[in-house]
Length: 195
Image (cartoon, rainbow, N blue to C red; front, side, top):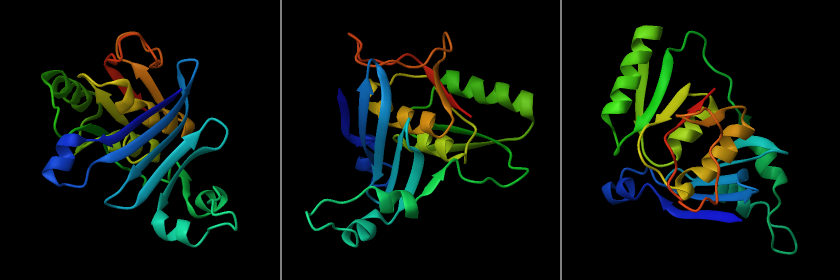
């Protein structure tokens, strides 16, 4: 089953801040096995699968134009060769970094951040829109993204596939089990993406 969100981050799109994405996921037996997230404003592509791992590719339009095959299709190989495999190498001594929603902050998120401050001392909190929060954890630029508020399956499936392919985990807040898809009720439970 394919799950497509043609405009993830509608509020960010309306605000014109560039933090919106196009999300596509392949879900098999309730588990996202492949995900693609495209960021139109920055021309950045994130993709991942259980077999390939996870990648970030910048300037994909230029890359795609230069790699047309004789049959008009585009090969995945140059995207993997010119992309960066996730997670990216990280700076040493980076503070514990938490991603949070730019448009959907909750009191529960504030309490979570405060709990992490008590545990780690200084923490860096970064707000972002759409599935970019999951991508930052997949990249290794953030340690955790707690989503302690409502989301729908189409908001998270592609990001979950990419995050898991990068070695991160996407688990339910209540029972630490992976998020599952194609449920009768498409509303996700609260979840946490972490390294």
